[in-house]
Length: 107
View 1 (cartoon, rainbow, N blue to C red):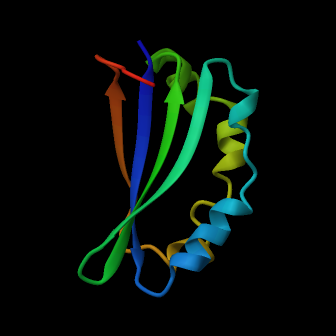
View 2 (view 1 turned 90 degrees about the horizontal axis):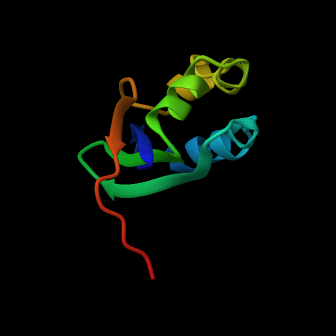
View 3 (view 1 turned 45 degrees about the vertical axis):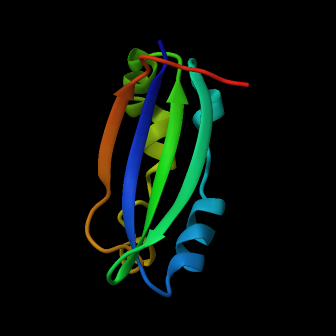
């Protein structure tokens, strides 16, 4: 079964475009990893003082995801994660959620 890794971000209102630009300009290294299947950045609803975003990666297995988190590609992709430009647009730290697929239906 596949594994979905998600990070939720609270982005300060008015900073949505800057946040999206940071992600578009990032050094994506996911395609180099065995088991990687898909990446999506999801833009969610506006809440009180922030807009919710979620990054979403799909992997062949949880083991493949864990290997990514321990890889040089992961370190390179997250090298700028703590930079002030990123921190200035988010409200609090991202929240990680990981899910095992138990049912999958498609068209």
